Amino acid sequence: MRCFFHLVNGHETVLDDEGVEILDLAAAHAFALQAIEDIRNEAIQAGASWQGWRLDVVDTSGNVLLSIPLEPTLH
Image (cartoon, rainbow, N blue to C red; front, side, top):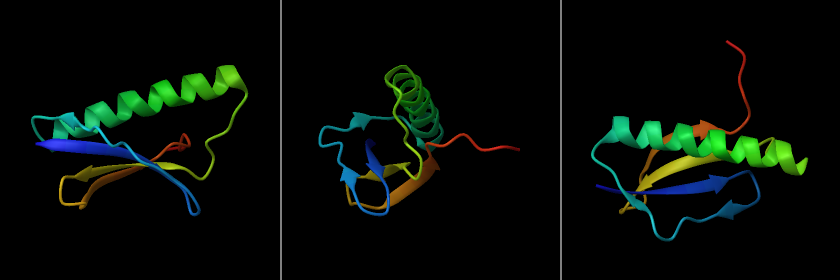
């Protein structure tokens, strides 16, 4: 299945217009977590903040399959 990984906050959206072919939802989740880790590392190096942003995993119909905040959460 093809999934798109959009960055979203309350006011802006950065669309992934290419997407990635993913085997299943578990693989999409793993891909999203790796993408978030990469984004966080780049933000730290650049002194930027992604506070309030999330990564939405969307299918070709536009349905949101997963939504993961970019901010680290405390468990």
